[in-house]
Length: 377
Image 1: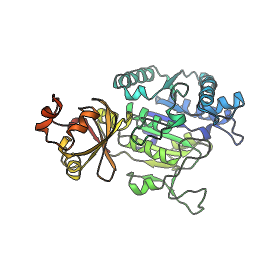
Image 2: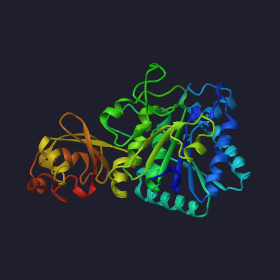
Image 3: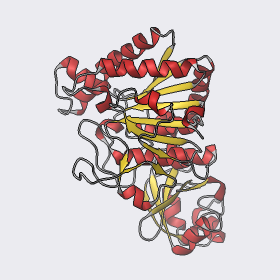
Image 4: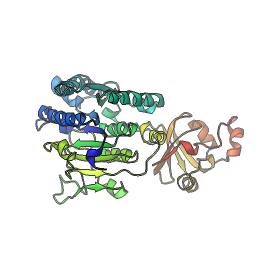
């Protein structure tokens, strides 16, 4: 696919791209993005924007240090979000383009009913030729601001890189463009190694490619690691991803003129919508550790996960929750919807399916997770 052939496009703007060298909002750069996106919109392309920057804007307006406390960050997000949306609305109004603000929390993805409802809302806005401007609702949802140290629990998204990927995946976008303050993916950290080489194309996200990821850049919450995670979500949903330098002049116009810049990630085998939700869009509440035979049955033979292959249960989860499936070396290789809660799973772990009723006093399924509810990672 040529980049210019993309019909439905998600743009993600990172915090560092939206600020200048003085860590103030760069209005000239944002309005340049708006002008370039408006041209694409007039060509009939469907555009979604996922934007960072609210906390930084709010901290500047309130003259506070946003790292002081979680409540300060939330206050900064509340003040900054108004400013941020005002900038986008004012800019797009000049090109007669309507915008809509959408603030999301993890629950909007974890709850499948809300997840499907979000899809309907976004598709309706696009049909009405509106550009949705999306951000995480940091004022009420704190997972992005504070993260989690729980090794079992995992949030569906903890940064706007992953959020943009989930939106692109949910809407079957042709392309996700992540604009950061780096030219793309390098084989080493270019800020520390002058001989680092830019990787222009990635056909498959291998373990070697993932090792190139570096820790978060100063000022943002993501870094290359989260961008590669986002690329994995989108490419497994059938879409392309570009990581490029948003500080480079006219970068959007150049990308859609087929100029080779940044790093392009190509789509791979596509997951179904349900398996995408299981694999990427839900909070993880527990872990199921399985033996080698169970892993082989799930991965190579497309079998359900039976209790006899389960070694250990970690975390606390209910029937219907999404859990991680790990091998004996604690490597996660799949996720799935549990047919039993964590207490019942612990009781039947290692036992034959024929003994489930005798142990629990009830039996809903022979499998702890049925094959149709397993998504391989």
